[in-house]
Amino acid sequence: LELIWYVSLGLYSYYHPLTLNHDEEYYVTRVIRDMVLVALSLAITMYFQIRVYRRKQQELNVAILAADKANRAKSDFLAKMSHDIRTPLNTIMAMNELIVSNTSSAKIREWVNDSNVSGRILISLIDDMLDLTKIEAGRMKLLEQPWNTKMLFDEIAKSWKLQTDKKKLQFEYVLEDTLPELLIGDEEAIRKITNNLLSNAIKYTKQGKVRLEVRWNQEL
Image 1 (tube, rainbow, N blue to C red):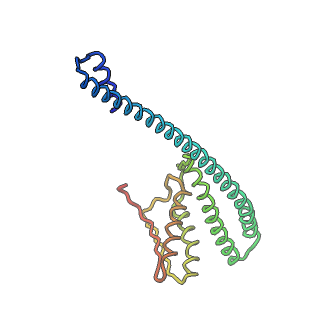
Image 2 (tube, rainbow, N blue to C red):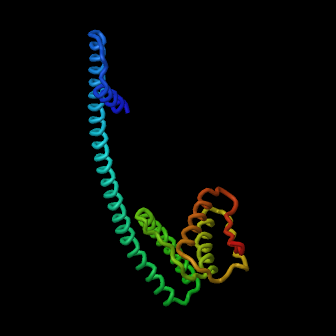
Image 3 (cartoon, rainbow, N blue to C red):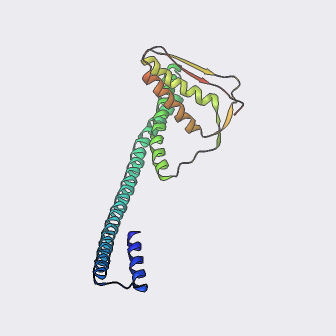
């Protein structure tokens, strides 16, 4: 703005000259000279400021590209690690199914089923890591499919009952009778949310009880 102001004054003086004596002409000449020097100083300052801005912008672009590259590397690592863990875990669970189908002992069946429940929780944790990469990439989608409410929450409650027993905590599980048998939504997302809530509840409860209560709100 100052540069525009000084240039405007200079143009005005050029097109509208004044009749001045020797002293006045001397002072006006000094003023114009000083104005030109200030304008040049401002121009040089703006030039270097623009250069600094462009250099900072280039550095920022380089940093953004490096961050994107690091995120892609992290996503690839998580995906590979998740696959490497899931493969032997699925093999273990498949062997458990063979044990169940080839034994007549009810106790062994119960133990194997508990082991499979814990295995499914571990797979859910692995899926959480994959979900993190999907969220960062903007590719996170929720499924819409029917799922059995009682079967899901019974399974979750049974697996966490073992954890509360280890910490000598009471575990209460209440499933409201009015809860529909089937709902539409992402079953694995519900499982992950419930598991995270129970995990924190058990982790931070030193004594007493942990209660899982599932109710149906018909107003929603």
